[in-house]
Length: 221
Image 1 (cartoon, helix red, strand yellow):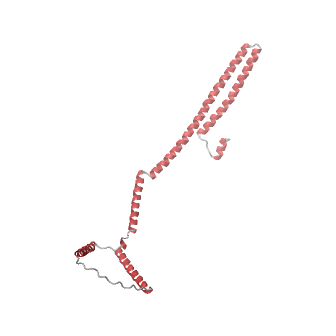
Image 2 (cartoon, helix red, strand yellow):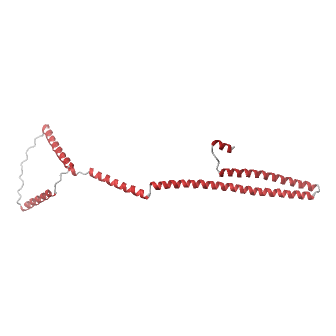
Image 3 (spheres, one colour):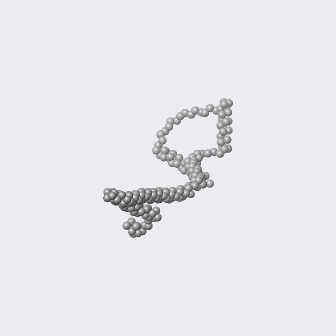
């Protein structure tokens, strides 16, 4: 029935499965023989008793010898069944080993694929490229957050002239030749009207726009 079902489903049993099925059928047949041998041994024993009661001592002895032969067959058949069962167990173990070997082979294939995708050389290449990208992004961030374009800078010569002028003023102040600053009387501050405030804001805005335009022209050049 199982073989017919396998035929309908298109699945062909493997050699190990077929061998196990054959071994189990053989064991069943031998178990039937054991029952027959045991029954015949019991019959010979009863026959020996009957013959002995009737005074046929020689016939009783022959019956007991046949009984021993049947018991020997029972013992031998049990040994054969044990060997067959051991063979079935060995087949199971070997099938498990085959399945395990195939699984390990699949795992090895997957590991090899992962190694190819992330080999030491490939990993080093990716890490170096990543490091370069991080440095580039850091450089971009530093450039975009630089405030030097909003600061009024002076060239080195201007800085030197200012330093010299400061030294001269300090020397004059130390010698007492620098005139004291004149104290001017404070003039009352007149309140700023809304019109003058607006005019001042517009002038400051124009000044900032002009500075921004100059900076942008300097950057483009």
